[in-house]
Image (cartoon, rainbow, N blue to C red; front, side):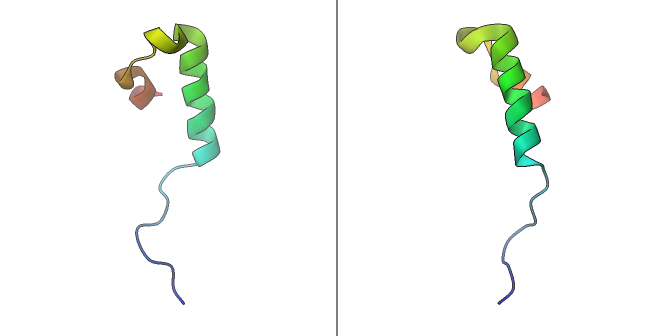
Length: 39
């Protein structure tokens, strides 16, 4: 059976690492959606 849907367009582990970097630098309260999106 073929996989359905769009192929994954990003590396999930890399996205998590970048998000953690944003939280580490800015803190939970200082991390904005814009900063997370940019990371």
